Length: 115
Ligand code: HEM
Image: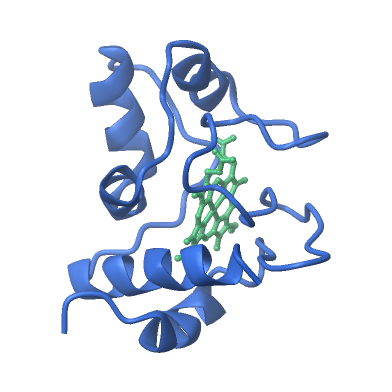
């Protein structure tokens, strides 16, 4: 399968300790993910982001599905490449190594954003 929101719901269990998605989601240890596809990085209301993610957003990073799939593999590596700064650091230390899991969880987040 290419992208499967239903499989992504299971993958999202790994994210739930820090993130909520869907109607009525609130910031926790991580920001609300409802509507993150199409949003500037690091801009959800009232969440205190890392300087690196905020800088990426200020430099024009807008989340697309492929960029989220890339980010989730290794957020710090993604920001270092993006910012061309070997000292950049993500505030999210979690990594999702399996590419299919990353595609599925992004499909799930997108599906939960339009309900
Ligand atoms: C940021 C997704 C797991 C903590 C983000 C962002 C996304 C994301 C898309 C950027 C949001 C934005 O720009 O507004 C996910 C997904 C996860 C996951 C899909 C599971 C597969 C986790 C876990 C934690 C966490 C387990 C806590 C242990 C954070 C924090 C940020 C963040 C603190 C802000 C990062 C920063 O300011 O640099 N996450 N996340 N995430 N996430 Fe996660």
